Length: 138
Image (cartoon, rainbow, N blue to C red; front, side, top):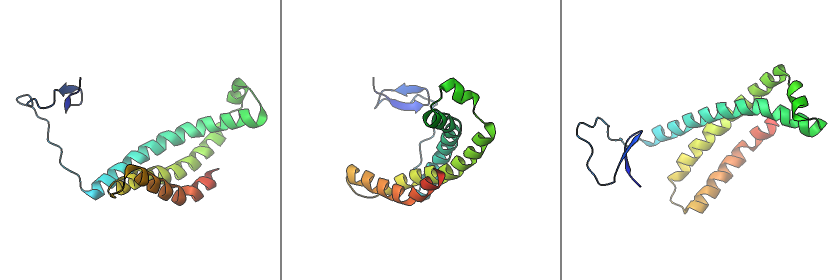
C-alpha cells in the first residue's frame, strides 16, 4: 500500500488530510548551497565508514591473496599499527572523494540533460578529478 509520509514511522494514504494537531513542519525548499553542503556532509559520513572498513579488511585480503594464507592466518598476522597507518591514508583520501562525489551529484542534477548523459558527465567529472588521489592511496 502506497502512502504519504506524515512522520518517520507513520504513513497515511495519499490525498487524505493530515491528522489534527499534527506538529510536522512542512519541508522548506533548500537553497542550492544548502543541498550541496548537505550532500557533502553525507559523503563525509560515508567516508568515515568506508575508511574504517577498508583499513581492517584490505590488509587481510591483500595478505590472503599475496601470501596465499588462510583467513585465520591472515587474521592472526594482522598488525594494528599498519591498520592505523592505513586508516590515516584511507581517511584522507575518502574525506576528499566521498563529499566531492555527493556534491558533484547535486550540482549535476541541476543540469538539464537526460539521466544517462547526466550520469556519464558526473562519472567523468568525478573519475577524472579523483584519479590522482586514488592512485596515491594504492
